[in-house]
Length: 277
Image (cartoon, rainbow, N blue to C red; front, side, top):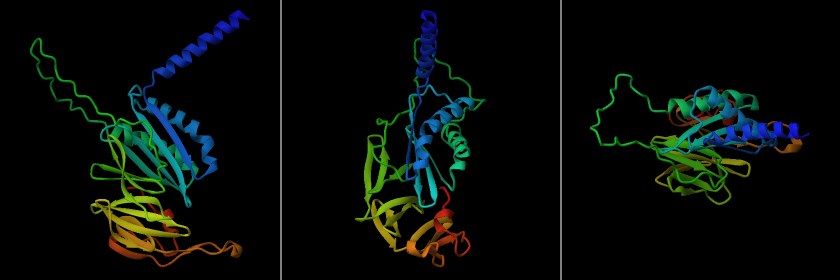
């Protein structure tokens, strides 16, 4: 009995010792679809394994926040690494089956593509004896957890904007600062950066509305669904049919609002045509 207990203690010590080697903290939050909740722990473990397999330094003292939320018929996958400036990843998924591939894309985009390149021709500077070379340290955002239930994220220049069901926030070193408050009864569900402004798509009961926002103020708005597609904006209204009719909802004809967007076929589910920034 004592021998069995000793072996168990050795195994537990080895496991917990290995866990402490990982400075990278991964947090996964799901919303909207109950089928996603049981996957949170598996996603966290899978991300850590993918990072290690791709050579990512998981000893870094950073937090990776992953949010997967269901909006209509799509799954919004968002990830933020709390470096300075923050590193972010966003993609819209049609099914849960796309999550494994998306995790690989996220690891590459957040940890590998954004890592500073080292030139092989760069020579090490000569330092005189007694002089300590300055050490460049990567800054860290002071907070670890987002205090909101994020619904969407976009980047404009070097600024990161995050929305919840009340408004849009600007991500800063000190935390989140309310940048735009949604009209009463409306919930922001999607953000886009477009020509120096932010396009916000909000949900008001069974209707969608669009807003163009600059410097935290609304400069234009639409009583329809506004989607950034390609190099422009398109619009259509969702016609919701009563449940008792058992007929599918349908969209009105798609209109070009600005620019030269890609126009999907008439009758397409506009929300399912959303592409990542």
